[in-house]
Length: 140
Image 1 (tube, helix red, strand yellow):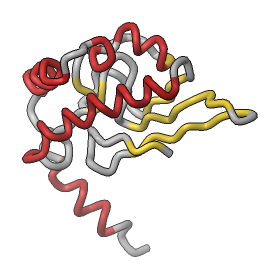
Image 2 (image 1 turned 135 degrees about the vertical axis):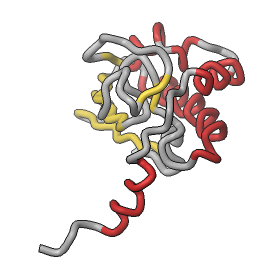
Image 3 (image 1 turned 90 degrees about the vertical axis):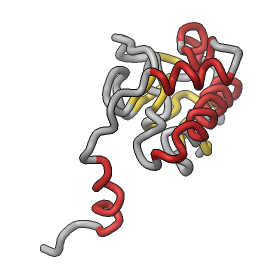
Image 4 (image 1 turned 90 degrees about the horizontal axis):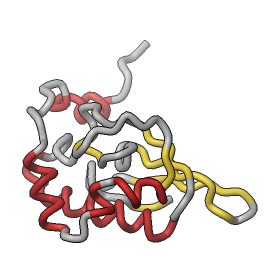
């Protein structure tokens, strides 16, 4: 498990392997193909802070995992992703390192500025997600 704050402060990714070598990273919503997870989904007042965290998390994964496969929870271009949309349906950390804005942009502040400028309207239903998930399922 890797701590990969960005979409949320407590976001994690899971690395799986074979014979002690990493073969895939389940990146959750943090690193969809060609982009990064949207940082404004949970705490709007922390969006900029989380965008900086997102930049660092993406780079940390790239540094440690190189060419392992990415298994993303969301597709690029979904409302849960931010940045440039990609039509790619599979990728590796190495491929992302050559094309993903979070990994090709050296300047963290420039990346954050572009990321924040590209965010669309906050989906209204997400304001209810946290409390509803915390409450658990209704009694049956």
